[in-house]
Amino acid sequence: MKKIMLITMAVALVGPAIAAPVFFDDFNAENGGVGKLNYTGFLNWNVQDGTVDLIGNGFFDFFPGNGLYVDVDGSSGDAGKMITSSPIWLQAGTYELSYELAGNQRNSQQETVYVEVHVGLVSTSHSLPQNAPFTLFTQQFTLDSAQNITISFEGAGGDNVGMLLDNVKIEAISVVPAPGAILLAGIGTSVVGLLRRRRRSL
Image (cartoon, rainbow, N blue to C red; front, side):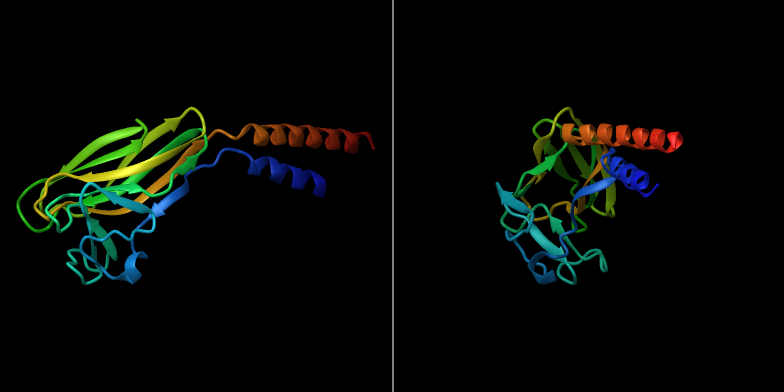
């Protein structure tokens, strides 16, 4: 009976993952928890084509208690583009990208952020009024085969006042098991059936 239970558990472990986070960044670990203008030292991101500001935690903090977050239009007069610094390896399946955006909280101009999952999986933009609070956005995409992806967020404009970004996450909604896992599941199922037949014959 114990053998059957162990093999059944092994078969279950190679089944599809459901709502499993594979990437998450809330920026709270950046720079020792201290905000900085024109910040470039991100753990998970490179900044290209301009600058962004790391703010919050009492430093230009428009949402006290929210930790650190990113102003995608830094303090150089040129809005920045953030792109994941390392590729994210995903198995074939369906995934959900989620992130929170807020208005600039400073002037009346409506700002815009462009969001992409490369290559060609997600391409969208969001515009929010100045006083909009952090709002959750989600985008789903499907991979027909395993591959590396990258995520990017790009601010529009160059007035040193941009939309705010926080809590970037990718979750697995349903994942197609790798061929080796499928083979293991098939072997496990066959062994379970064999053990049950042997028990009945005793």
